[in-house]
Length: 171
Image (cartoon, rainbow, N blue to C red; front, side, top):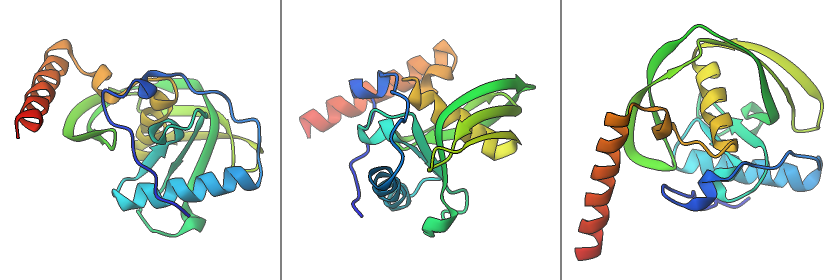
């Protein structure tokens, strides 16, 4: 298992829409194990393949940060068939380090997807799991959570980011 570098804003790869997962098997299992190690190393509770430069509609999550591969949940090719209600909670992102903000998301989802073996499943989810699904699925469509912020908050983030870049270049 290998730990991969997580791409960070403003890497252009993060803006890409990922391709569907069509190959299920040993290579995918290795990628999933690597993603889990990478996610736990940060530590995070979710990671999309696009965040490590892999062009696949795949994400994993482990809400407990268990460091137990058997507890890692794998989602391939997710598609929301129902989104209802709304809630606002604080989010952060491994691809946008050192920044968190309140983000409005659907409170409940019904999602269709495939597991690590390609078996289709449907899930009716809410709470933190629904938030993770939305956040990670956004990554698969080239959307970072900062794009879900108001123009004012997004502008504040970008100004702060530019200042940090300038300090890094000078120092």
